Amino acid sequence: MYPFIRMFKELWKFRNAPKLDLTGTHVSHHRCWPWDIDMWMELNNGRTLTLYDLGRIPLAQRTGLVDVLKRRRWGLTVAGSSVRYRRRIRTFERIEMRSRAICHDDRFFYIEQSMWNKSGDCSGHALYRTAVTGPGGIVPPAEVMRELGQEPGQYPMPDWVRAWSDAEAQRPWPPMQDA
Image (cartoon, rainbow, N blue to C red; front, side, top):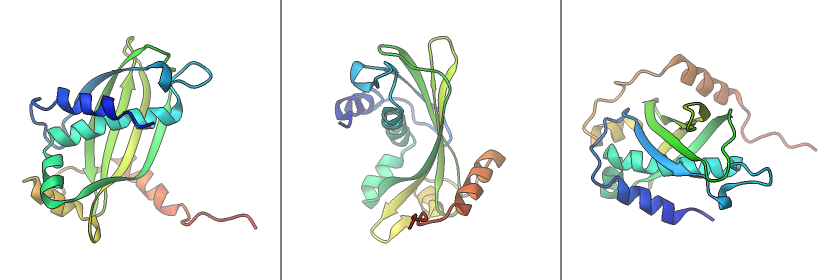
């Protein structure tokens, strides 16, 4: 089940937090609860993706994006992700999550998120390709940037993000089906 209560708690908690620049880092703290674990008694890989929502949505709130979405009646969607899992997160462990937008291209925004354990080690890192959507489909990031009062293209795409995006463009869609 989606953690709606946890999401509302995060939105409430950060409702008066200082505004962030689009590429500013939102830092939040979470706990791995028994309903987040798998049979190996660690944070479930699928649940990890859900918990990353608890950082992305407040990030959107703090950058002013949520206000723009409401005003324009736009939505958000995830168009792709790549996740690295490096350290186990066990039941009741407290984690620090860091979330920030990196850049955009002509269709998507790219967001990175990471989880850090109490020892200061990075437990996992995710790169997301996200889009703002409207009645006509994907809203060009340049239009979203102007709505946020920012200049489009002011955040250059790092080489590692471009390499991932280029690799994703080579992936067949729809996937091949075995006959």
